[in-house]
Length: 223
Image (cartoon, rainbow, N blue to C red; front, side):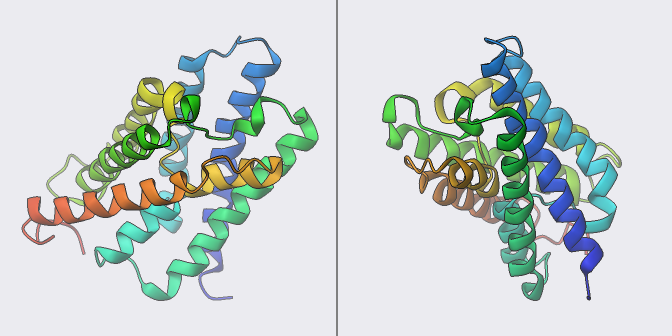
């Protein structure tokens, strides 16, 4: 199958991201808070960093439907691969959540992202801003040829960690529809789930438009 390596890398990468990240949430619940919210944030940031350096040269290390859609709308990704990438990411996430439920049980809402106190407006705004920041860093550190070479993984991983530490207790700091969809599906918990599709996609598209302006219509970015 054409592009099978890229799709497998996206499946595996998203699986590892969800397995480690939401797994940390579940273990924190099982251990009565031993991991801590800050520890969960570090896990998410660390796994993103590791995956970018280990699989980025194969698939581009999207692992996030919002990122794939922003790359496509910005002209950096082929339209024919958008749906296959999204399917691979969602399936990888579902596989991870399914395995976690088998191994750890239905604890910690399987790491599902739910607005604090049901405040969906707050979470909608914050998730949009968080994803905007993340996508702006991805464009600036990973695609712009003026950026220091080799530091994209660190910049992106640190951004994920700091955003999770900052807003994780309010929104869950998803920034990734696949990350939110898998635990919602496996745990059948759909509370305000729509937020975690609309906000990340809107935030990433806003970042694409912004960086297009900052980079002279992307003329400063790599082909």
